[in-house]
Image (cartoon, rainbow, N blue to C red; front, side, top):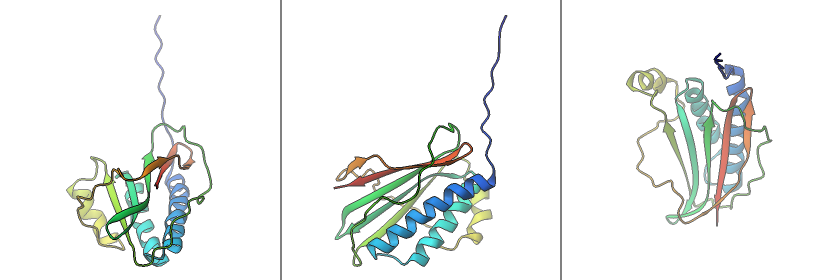
Length: 164
């Protein structure tokens, strides 16, 4: 006798929106605490990130504050749309240094589904212009720290923090 088991993850657009609201709050807190970008720009980033997430194209989002070319702090949000094993925590709890003369870099990583057709479809809907990046986002000069997890019905984001 043999048995077959199938596990399917079910989440809706509303679940993605719930998780992306938490990411948006983190981005706005980072913008506010560093002073390196406006909260309005952070909202624009969050809008574009949510569009990519809803399309199933987003792999990760990496945010770094740099001053004079040196990384001061970073956070990576990694999409988890398959395991459903993440907890659901509140945004925040991430103090970023005040650095109004610094530069806040954001790098989006896409999965293989984000092809030319998807890019052509989404680009007109973006609030910001995105360009290819060759930035090193390994954060070798920073120590990795546990972050937070945001999830809703099998869709989640794992946040990993990096600091000095």
